[in-house]
Each structure stands twice: as structure tokens, then as C-alpha cells.
Image 1 (cartoon, rainbow, N blue to C red):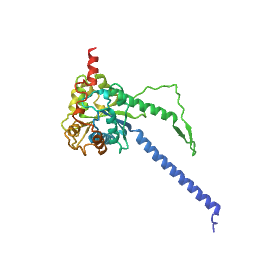
Image 2 (cartoon, rainbow, N blue to C red):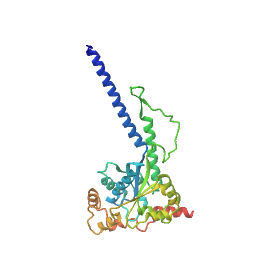
Image 3 (tube, rainbow, N blue to C red):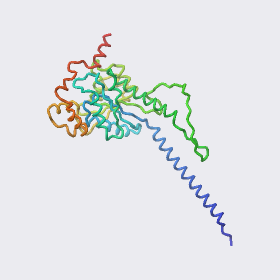
Image 4 (spheres, one colour):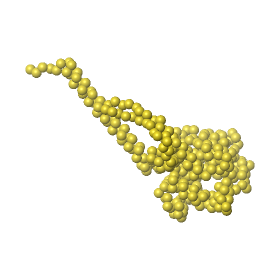
Amino acid sequence: MPSLPSYETAGGLHGNWIDNREDVRVFHVEQQLQVLTMDKSEKTEVVLLACGSFNPITNMHLRLFELAKDYLNGTGKYRVIKGIISPVGDAYKKKGLIPAHHRIIMAELATKSSNWVEVDTWESLQKEWTETVKVLRHHQEKLEAGSCDHKQNSPVPERPGRKRKWVEQRQDSSQKKSLDPKAKGVPQVKLLCGADFLESFGVPNLWKSEDITRIVADYGLICVTRDGSDAQRFIYESDVLWRHQSNIHLVNEWINNDISSTKIRRALRRGQSIRYLVPDLVQEYIEKHDLYSSESEDRNAGVVLAPLQRNAAQAKS
């Protein structure tokens, strides 16, 4: 009769079985991490930037971000990681434009419940009006700088055999890389806008042609269309936009939403309700500070819009 294995022998077999099972488990975990890493690495991370007056911010402004995010994520090529609202500064001199600090506060109140859209004050704090392409460049460079800092300070895992240790990644600080909107591993800033914004490219002296080229070529546009607009035809009729149409994404808004800041201000001047057109906190702030009236609508009346003034002067010189 064959002898039964001793306690030590059985224990050894049991221990080996546990070790093997642990190896299999580690292998599967690493496989899953590899798949997740590959899935993320194949998608371009995007930061959506919306520039404008936000005078005041409306629910439609917020919807633009959600629509654009759904569209880009749905392509399987992009992953939207952040949205930025950048109110224009007072130097823009648009008729009816109330002070920037009010518009910033309202935008912050509107995004209070969002976990991915935030407000940036850099543009609004500039003493002079700042071209949109410079705002895009500012945020792209900020991402580039943040990425460089992260790479220099982040530990890199090494795993010789089954042991894991952490070593600091060393980079030669003397090597300076140019800030490239399409640098590998760095999120890309794309301009988010509505159809009106896109069509404003055709207004004489409102935009410099080289700025339009830089915006669509280096960054790209996410344009949310609306009823009554023909963004595709506008792109067709513009040589610059047509040349870079692959970097212009048109997003259809199938749920009609004709809310605009102009209509909000008109309703307020007439003493009409704006509830459900703007976030509740924004409505409360407007009422508390009595922001929009016939007097505020005359602000900057007769003053030439900053870009028209600057571009017309440059055209003459």
C-alpha cells in the first residue's frame, strides 16, 4: 500500500499551488493594466476651451461642453479630460459688456456643480484685449509645462523579476523642447464654439487671416451647430477652413436650444423671467446686483470693438 504524503510534503504542494495561483493572478492583473494603458494611449486627450463674453453665461454655454464631450469621446479617437471657460476682458469693448469680475463670478457659480468644466481668469485679467489664438497658445503651453514637470518628478516603476522598486526618472534639464500643440503625451487644446463664432471668421477686420489659420491648423475647432446655420457651407466657401476641414468637428444639436446671452439681457431689461435659462445661482447673482438694465446695455456704445480697431489700424499701416 503506497504511503500517504507527510504533512510537510502536503503542505509544500499546497504552498506551491498557492504560489502558482498568485503568479496567475498577478499575470492577469498586469494584462488588464496593459489593456487599459493601451486603450488610453491610443486616444488623444483633449482640453476644450471656450472663449467669449459670457454676458451672462447661460445653460446653452454649459450644454456646448457636454455635447462636444459626447461627440469627441464617441469617435473613439479622443478623450476629453477638461473644459475651460475663458471670459473675455473688459478691453474687448463690446457694447453692453458688464465688468469682467461679475462675468467671472457668474461663470464660477454656473460651473460649481461640474466635475470637469472650470473657469480661467487669465484672459480676463489682461490689460489689453488678447487674441483668441494667444489664449489657446497660453493654455497649450501651460499643459506642456505641466507635462514636463510631471515627467521630471514622477517615479517610474521597474520590476526585475517579481520585485518592484521605484526609481526617479532623470531628465537632462539642459534639453529644451519646443512647445508643440501636438506633442506626444500632452493633451491638445481645442477651441469650442457655436456656429455664430465660426461664421464670425467672415466678418471683415474682426479676425486676422493668419490667426484663423493658426487656430484651425494648430489647435482645431469643435463647433456646435444650430437650426438656421449652415456651418458646412461656410467651411466650403472659405479656402482656409476648407484646407483644414479635417481639424474642424461639426456637432449637431438635435434638441433645439435657442438660448442666447442677448435674449437673456433683453428679457431682464423688460422685467421678464429668465428662470431655467440660466443656472439658479447665476439668476440669483444677477438679481442681487441688478446687473442688466437699459443703462448697462449702453455700456461701450459708440466704441469700436477692440479687434476691429486693432486689425483695421494694422491693415492701414
